[in-house]
Image 1 (cartoon, rainbow, N blue to C red):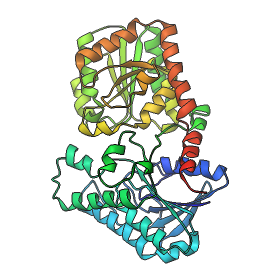
Image 2 (cartoon, rainbow, N blue to C red):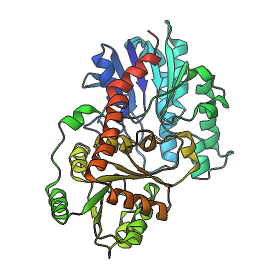
Image 3 (tube, one colour):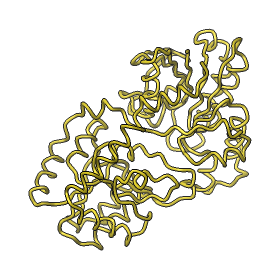
Image 4 (tube, one colour):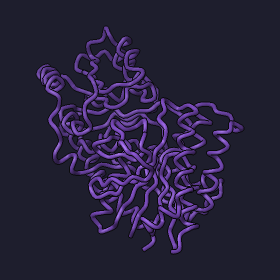
Length: 408
């Protein structure tokens, strides 16, 4: 098949996020399919953006044909970012004939986080001289997320446009692939027929775990010193922001006051300085700078347990699909998990300790359970998580599931 994936923010290992389209495409290419991306030349998610001179300039990265669309640069989530969405979708629609002639897709996947790209996909399908399947992929729930989490009113023009987009893909897409596992009923209320819905989660790339980069020497040395003191090391890695309930973790460490415990937080984020200040008198908490993604397996190999948590919010009712959850399970270490959502892999696969989100007393009890567990019990928990990932959540498996959604 010729597969065309439209994702405003699509990246690559060299550029940075988003990674999911790249990982999927690489597996599809191994199966003999030809994959094209249409993506914007600027994304706030990437470390490095491509330099192009014209719209739809092509670049081949690891066998994937990237077609870059020129868009304006922006900062944050203001009006300028919204205008780039309109610019990106508008250019694809205006160049539909050119795209169809050069790519001739059999499948069009719209996957830009925001739902407006469905209009670009629908235009391509309508203009095509051959049958083309249209699949819409949901990463985040828009516009319900800005309504419920950021209190945007339903009458806000941005919300109205996003709602039109959501209603449109629910009605016109042949299939809806959703990362949130529990979104089916909600989408049916917005016009999707039940048989269109397919859940395909995030996952891991096995090669990244087979050939990881060595851990930063200063972090490795610190961990080695703590191990000599028989410390039990709990690690958090990722964006250091309040959304990941790090304040709850710091409060639990202080409340427990157990000299056996050492918590390390690896990463950066807008709330890091505040959290550093909060814990400055607690030697059981230590902060490190972020490390490259390909060092994460080496980091997790050195610790005893991994903290994965999230502040409670209403959008979690649709399910969660954190990348860090699958990385943590793949590490073979037990999880200290504190997320309130309908899908709970830690409970399902018995790969750690699960407690109520944002509950300091319960989190303290969860840490105590890990501290009191035997080495064998901890090992068994960790291996259950790793096995669950290898059987269900590797990108070769997930890409095959996605191919099953496509018409041949």
